[in-house]
Structures are given as C-alpha cells and as structure tokens.
Amino acid sequence: MSDIKTFDDLKFEQDINFPHEKLGKQPKFNAVFSVNDYVVSVVSGGSTYSHEGTYEVAVFDSNDDPVKLSDHDTVLGWRTKQEVSRIMKVIQLRPDLLKPRTIEQIWDEAGV
Image (tube, rainbow, N blue to C red):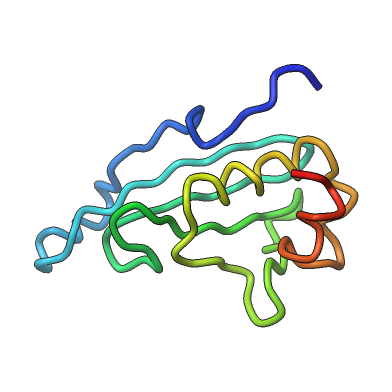
C-alpha cells in the first residue's frame, strides 16, 4: 500500500453536540479514520482519557463492535501522535492481526 495514512491525515472537528466548555472543561475534538472494515476513533479534550498532546483511541470493526486494544480495555488513553499513527498503520497493513491480540502485542510483529 503506497499511500499509508497517519495522524497528520486526520481531520479533527469540535464536538458541538456536547459542549464540554460549558461545564468548565476543554472543548472535545473528534476525528475518525476508516479502512479495511475498521474505524479508528481519535478524540482529545473534554472528558476524555487525554491531556495536551495526547489522544484517546478506540477501534471498531464492521459490526460496530469495539476491538480490544489492551488486556483490560477497548480504549487506549493518553496516546501520542506517533502511537495513533502506528495503530492506523496496523489497520492499513495488517488488519488480520487485530483479533484476538491487543494493539501492543502486534506493533512489533507488524513492524510499525
């Protein structure tokens, strides 16, 4: 695949459906990336598992079921731009590795 998408290709939009700033919190921003029957959800701000410079990530399969990304959860919090890019690369290059292993278990195997 010659045109691998990374974090820099994501287009974030402010979540206007739930204005976190009215609760005294940072605004929430969302971006999604779809490929190979998977959707990557990346969010920051608001009440998410992120702080400045990090992001919360979840992956959903074609049935809209969450993919287990760690031994304990389907959501990864406080991830860097580089880690988000690595997740996106795995889904583009080796989606077959997503189940049943966690993303941490396959990064080395996938070579991204």
